[in-house]
Image (tube, rainbow, N blue to C red; front, side):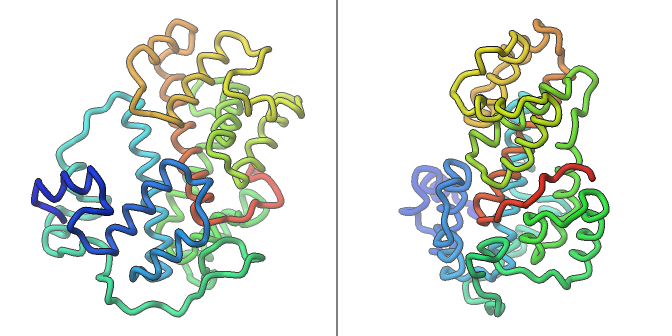
Length: 306
């Protein structure tokens, strides 16, 4: 979108003073708040995108793209994966490079595009964005979620204007239900999820991570103790390694080094446990940020298999 190196450098330095459209400035502003402090976001952050020209569906899309990018970037940083050239130039899932180069607007409509007639919801709605739960793709995903969890999570409902995101969302929920390796125990897995929801200050994520931790450990107060900057006093050496790592990934994934992986090997969890802990952290952060940014109301029940 910005082939000029000088313009890209100005964007990296400060998007708000760069010679780019106001719409793009607002999108960059949203992304920075999404990553740095999603818990501070308000309905005004979404309204600024609308005022700049995004439709309601595009507002939801922009938030889901931020969530997906968070997931992938943290996984790449934590895994020590070098950035591929294609990832730097823009092509996304299902899109060829030519699709981007052919249009200066990329995947987003220009600021003059018609706005759909969906208004920001009232405070008693499921989120700060409009919804349309009659769309066939959303109804199919809602039925799948209802069968698995006994209800349709509010975050899924909040994404109804972008139902193509639902498969990734449902996959993320399934991956978060339990450890994906033989070395990361259910207790360690639950500790990671609970710690992350504290760090993201996610009221939405807290409902599920608290319930999961209580189910696995039987300790109704442990979730609260994970809110401190350090591991709980009773944590054993392995738990401290895992919690310190999850904290580093959630706060500053770019600071992860090979020493973190070595720590997992030394405490007996190995590379398999390391990758599992990394994925659990990055997915939980991505989901929590998304819920924060869209103002999703907490579910009455935890999103755990019925």
